[in-house]
Amino acid sequence: MSDTLSDVLRAVRLTGAVFFTIDAAAPWATETPHAREIASRIIPGAEHVIDYHIVTAGSCWAGVVGEPAVQLEAGDVIVFPQGDSHVMSSAPGMRGQPDVSLYQASGAPLAVTLSGDGRGRSPAELICGFLGCDARPFNPLLGTLPRIIHLRGRDDADGVIAQLINLALAETTARRAGGAAVLAHLSELLFVEVVRRHLEALPPEQVGWLSGLRDGQIGRALATLHERPAHPWSLEELAAQVGMSRSTLAERFAHFVGIPPMQYLAQWRMQLAATLLSGTALGLASLAEQIGYGSEAAFSRAFKRWVGVAPALWRQGKRVGQDSGPGTSRR
Image 1 (cartoon, rainbow, N blue to C red):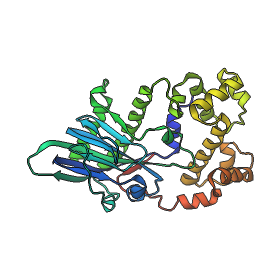
Image 2 (image 1 turned 180 degrees about the vertical axis):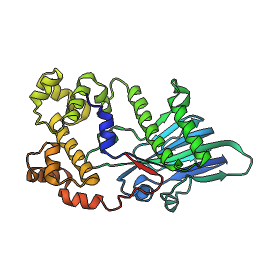
Image 3 (image 1 turned 45 degrees about the vertical axis):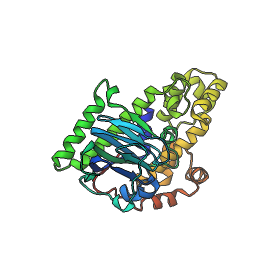
Image 4 (image 1 turned 90 degrees about the vertical axis):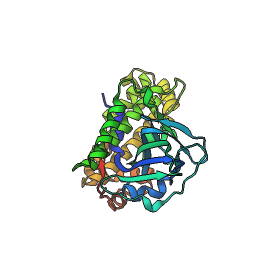
């Protein structure tokens, strides 16, 4: 059976980059601009940027601008999936001065020292990084994630998060050849682990694409569509495949995922097509066949209807700025 989460992460071209290590002493504050303001600077070609911060020593506060902050301790990870402008600080309620010019793709992480009155109260050390991904034409994961995911180090019972943090610390400190690529991949692994933990902690009444993955029947339906996206599925055949009635599948799928199964399949095919258009030289006729369309014309019509532009124009636009630059890795 298809690993649906992995399918989506590959198709939306998850890309990791690490840019800052912060050594701070109170009072201090640093404010990150909204992702749309810095995405093209950090990871050229990325439509959306997800910010994350790892507290490697000490403690601090973090929160979306204008919202209550949460306290972070050593070993904690905080992720801002929607790319909101946010503040990291030595105390709640502080604001920094966002500087867009600071965010530029580079090789080794940039070391930043933040100090207030020099007394060294509430020191903190952080690794701050970014993940790029496609938001269009269809990223079902992004739409189901909250504005903040806070993973507490003390809840890391199996030690996986701690191991990833320790590896990141070692690479940041050693500055060995290839370190930027290693850190970029570590950031991707960390994000996947954060999403896994978030999925496991979702309450039973939660709806959304991730909750659909967790549901036994809808999870099987999603996996079936992802395993054979080019198959000419009908609602009846999909329902029979997962052992549900047609009406029950339609109702439960829409309840969790938010759209009917066949609409989900159509949008997922468009994301697969966009990935192939961006990353391969596959001709439109071959591409159409690969994702389940009988002809190039039928595929082109569907792509333009769902995405808003013709496939050739999409490919041309996505190939501008495809070079991800040093310090990033693309799945």
